[in-house]
Structure formats: C-alpha cells, structure tokens
Amino acid sequence: MYIVVSEWEVLPGKEEEFHRVAGAIGQILRTQPGVVMVEAFDSGGKKMAVHGYKDEATYRALVQDPNGVFARAVEESGLEKIARWVRSERGETIDF
Image (cartoon, rainbow, N blue to C red; front, side, top):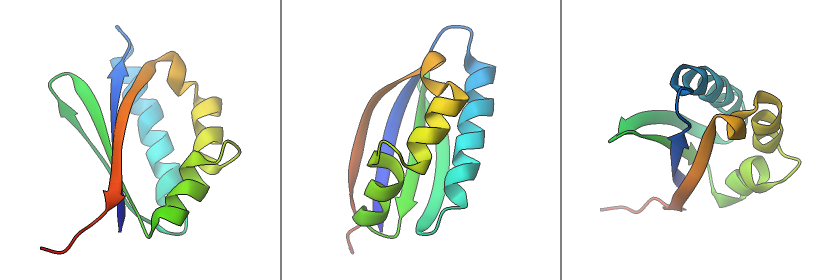
C-alpha cells in the first residue's frame, strides 16, 4: 500500500469549516477505486490527513493529476481559502 501523510494548517476562525470541507473531500476520495483508507487526526493544533492507496500509480492519478478528482474537489470546495497545506510524507508500506 502507498501511504501519504499530509499536514494542514487551518486559518484562524476556519476550524469548523475546515472539518466540513475536509470531511467532504475525504468522502469523495473513499469512493475512488484503489483508495484503501482515508483518516485524519489533530496533532498539536495541526490537522493530519492519512491516505492509503493500492499503489503509487493510483495516488498519482487521483491526487497529483491537476485535472484529477482531488484537485477538482479542492478547487470546488475552496479548501485552500480556509487551510494551508504544509507538507506531505509518502511511501510504500514495508513489512516488519
């Protein structure tokens, strides 16, 4: 599985709106073929999104494509007007 952990910083006063919008985007991603999981958590005032994809190709097609489902959802929802993407870590899961 290909995992992506993204950190988001919510703009002041936009917390409730962020939860609504991010939740809607998460629901859209959950319906896409090859999406294994979509979760989120708070970490010291930061919002962390954890997504799992069947493989890196699925991730790239859904999230990194400027015309893909994620880019459209972000644009249509106005996510970047209420939060700022800080960084992401990505990689294939490993067996221990």
